[in-house]
Structure formats: structure tokens, C-alpha cells
Length: 438
Ligand code: SAH
Ligand code: SF4
Ligand code: F3S
Image 1: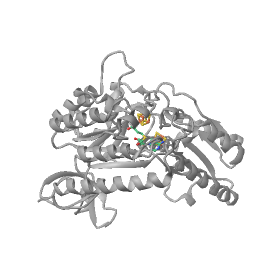
Image 2: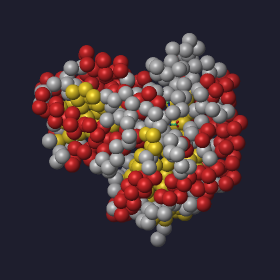
Image 3: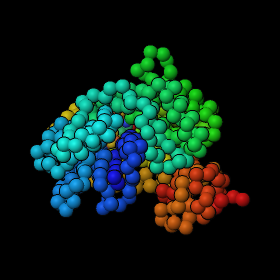
Image 4: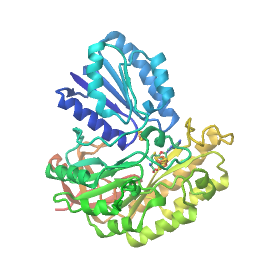
């Protein structure tokens, strides 16, 4: 059969989709781009913000008509939203056209659920409330052969008061260093140049182990992999970023000089309410320490605007952190109340128009800083891993520097997957232009 997977949300979900696709391929099914050609449609959902939930139910409604025309189409839904009981209850009562429902902890059960459904022709629902042992050795259908995601841990124990992820992904569990090494070595042997280690908080990698294998040790071990050029990772929680990890980044050329270090807010009062366990001053001090040890580092961050109770003064602190830390890139979000989280239902919500107004002011400062940083790259010659044709102009190539800067430049498609030297000729707010050096 032909199948089409649509993925929402973060890299964890993308990596899960690669595994779902891997399992289906192993069974002889074929991945297709065009949904009209698909016999199985799989929607891998995200529930980090409310509008993601709303949009999903909109999409789901659309499939009612599609299934009226093509009753034999199998519709499977999975991912973080399915870990919410209210969502599954709504699907069961109002969306009987769904055929298979599974969660984030049991993607390995999907092939069995599929055959079960094909035998019985009824809705099959299986969601585990908690994750068991991490299932190793699932086949993975990778999107690229020169770069790959490698999940090193599942779940999150931090319970930031706005966040649903600890409820949708369960408690933190780390994979063994040996199984990660095996996966990375196999990737490198197959020509993979860059890996991105994934976890909700990679800095607490290994905390559930008895011995003291930490994230720094893991990265140093992986840096020994022959043929591999770059190691990236995300995400780093500021409260757990150790000197050992900073040293590993500074010393190991293969570990990219880029840290995604979500600050969420600049106000110590809001950070306390968010349960982030650091404050404005300690965050700035951490950034200063990183920049001193790794002067060429790129720092990116996540910021939430309009957390309940956020005043103009709190927001000024966020602007101040942005100015002081000079982030290369910030992913900015309007606070979205998530049912079941501690911050949900607070009566001091920030009005929507005020949230938008603050976000716009934040973006203005952000764009100015981003452009200034990018201008500092002009005239430099940088290693760029070529990812393929540029989105805006398919005649150009695009790729990324070690510091995760997007670079566009003329060149031959056959360079895709290779690392080339590019001289930067022009800076834009979100990207750089350049020319290959001969
Ligand atoms: N584990 C990662 C984040 C995963 S969620 C970390 O701690 O860094 C990605 C981002 O979504 C978060 O960093 C946060 O900025 C944003 N986010 C999470 N919950 C949110 C909510 N309820 N409203 C708005 N943004 C949210
Ligand atoms: Fe959510 Fe906080 Fe865990 Fe990140 S660390 S996934 S923001 S609870
Ligand atoms: Fe969304 Fe789940 Fe990732 S809620 S952000 S897909 S962990």
C-alpha cells in the first residue's frame, strides 16, 4: 500500500515519523508525496500550543469528506495530542471516521494495530499512559542521508508551569551510550556527515543511570566517530548546562559552536512562576561564561511573551536580556494556556492584543540584533554543509555553517551533502549570501 505521513511539531515528532515510515517500508509499503495516491494517511500531531489542537480538529473534519469518497482509505492519528485523554475521547465520540489511534510511547505497535484494523475493520485505539523501556532498533526512514536526528532520551521531568510536554512524553529516560554509539557509527559508515542529538533537555542525559555518564562524556565519545564531521544537539536547559559540556564544545572541533538555550522570559519573577529554576542574572552570567570560553559561539533561544501576570516591567526585562545576550535567533511564542498544566486557568491572563503588541516590539529588537550579527560575517570564509537547492531561488544552493547560519550561494547540485568553503558577501536579517571559494 501507499502511505503519506504528515508531521506537526518538533524534531522529536519528525524523528518518530521517520521511524513510523521505516516500519511501514520494512513491511513493503511505499511512501508517497501526494495524499490522493495514499491508501494510508498518518497524522503525527503536536499539542504544545492550543492553536495546534484547534487546527488539527479542523483537518480531521476534512477527512470525513475524503473518506466518504474513498471509504477504503485508512486514517491513523498519533503523536502528542493523543496522550491527552480529552482528545481521544473527542475522537471516539465525534470522529468515527478515524481508523487507528496511537500515542508517543507505543509507535512500535503501529504495524500490529494496522493489521488488526485490516482484519476487523473497526477503530483500533492504543495509547500508553507512561513510556516503558526505550524500544531500540526500530527501522528508520531518514529524510536525508548526509544529516540525521539521533534521539538520546525521551520525556521530560522539568514541569515548566506552562508546558504540556511532560504530560505527552512522560518521564525522562536516557538511551544507553552503547546503543547511541552504534546508531551513530552506522550512520557515519553510510555517509552521514552531521548528527543532531535530540532530547527535551539533553543536559540531563544519563541522570537516570547509576554511573556518571553525562552529556559531555557522550558527546566526546561520539566525536571519535570516524567520518562524522558535525555534532549538534537540542535542547539545553540553562539550569543544567554544566562546565563539562561547555568544555566539550570548546575543545572538540566536531561539536558545533551553537547552543540553543531557551530563556523563556527575562524577568526573574516570571521565571520563578514558570518553574525554570534560574533567574535573569544567573542566565546572563551563564551566557557570559559561554561567550568567554567559546568566543565564536552562536546562541539561539525560545521566548514566551504574555505568560500570566507579565507586566510591562517584566517584559522590559525580556527586552534587556535580548540586548545583553544578543541572540543569533529567537523563536518567539505567544503564551498559550494548556489544560492540565499549573499555569492553566490563572485569572491574571495577559490580553491577546497586549501579547501581540509585546511580541512585535520584541521582534523589532530581535531583527536588528540578528542583522548586526550577520553583518559581522561578511568577508569571512566559512565551512558550509550543502543541504540542497535554496528555497527562494532553486538555482542557488543553500546550507548551514557550524553556527547554524543559513547561507545561499550559486553552485552545482552535486555538492549536496558535502562541506564547502563559502566566502560571505552579503548579510540579510535571517540568512547570508556568499560564493564558493575555489
Ligand atoms: N524542552 C524544550 C522545549 C520544548 S517546547 C526546552 O525546554 O527548551 C518548545 C518551546 O515551545 C518552548 O521552549 C517554549 O518556548 C514554547 N512553549 C511551550 N509551551 C508553551 C505554551 N504553553 N505557550 C507558548 N509557548 C510554549
Ligand atoms: Fe517543557 Fe520545560 Fe520540559 Fe522544555 S524543559 S519540555 S519547556 S517542561
Ligand atoms: Fe509538540 Fe510534542 Fe514536540 S507537543 S513540540 S510534538 S514534544
